[in-house]
Length: 441
Image (cartoon, rainbow, N blue to C red; front, top):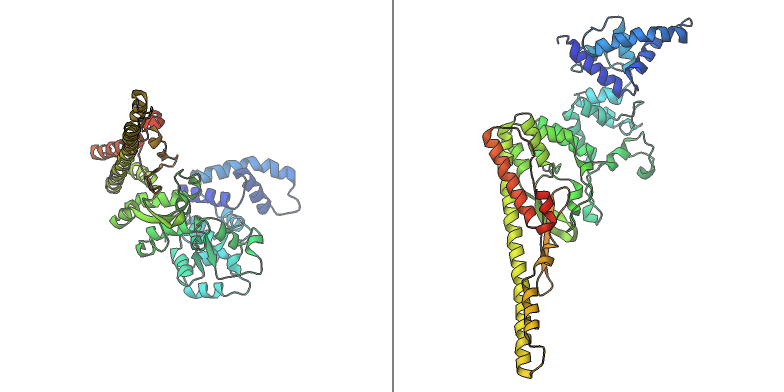
């Protein structure tokens, strides 16, 4: 059983109204009145006359100030295509509302027999979205039915695609063994397959559900801390990042109190970028997760994550700093050696190049390192790169991501960690010289 909570019922009712495509509460009230007064004698004038009262009534219901009546309940159930039990439990209890099988019903089920029968249907209902343009996977996420999602993965009905090995730009869309007669590139938009292929939402939402269900062993196979775009990193950084940001996943990580989860998403890991180069990075949205941890007062997790990215920022600074010193020394030694060679040749041949002006110019060039800093770059997503070339024409480089936190919340210990993190971030930017001076102000 469950207790009736008018406020939660109202919130759930508003959510259902929005999800079912009603443009506004007023739009829903019109449909409610038409359904309620489904008689020949109910005219448009009658509807307009009753609309103000209906809007006022449902405004109170949605805000939790008024309870749903027995007269209203079956009409709401019909219009919103949910059971009366779901409405009264504010979405905690579900029951089938119609006799024929639907995506909505399967997504609520925890019966493997139902799933097996559904996936073997000749009409391939799994591929179809319903009249609300929602697939069975949309509903599975809505009902947080992780058991069903894991069933689809374990049985191989769906899997995540990474085509980078075929030489294409990597992506983590999905594919399915359930095939329709349509070409997937010419698929009607009410078909699930187009959604599977075209975005990363399925993977990241499944990751969030796996964390909520403490199924940590599946995270690596889902590439939980990875995003496709980061595999395209170059010396110029990246251009497209935010489309892979899943706020639900970030919030789920931030709320976790499990050490294994916090360590997993804060640790460095290796990825492959173009030309089969391996680089080391950290979960790209870890700064967002830390900000959320502090917002929800999950300070224990925030402290762990902050300490790890402090180490990452510090190591990144040291690596780039050492590389810049090596590049500067290489430049200085190379020009100095060239100058000394020229002087020696001139002394032996008596050529006129050997004079004070020429020597001075060589010395000035040897001490001018501005062009070396020009290869240092930090993009707007805080991906940092630096490279230089040795005398043999071989490049040495580094590409990774760095982190900062803007939150002012937290205990003195947390604030101290934030200050330390941001100091290392600023030190890294300072390696770029005057180009980044304005950012540091």
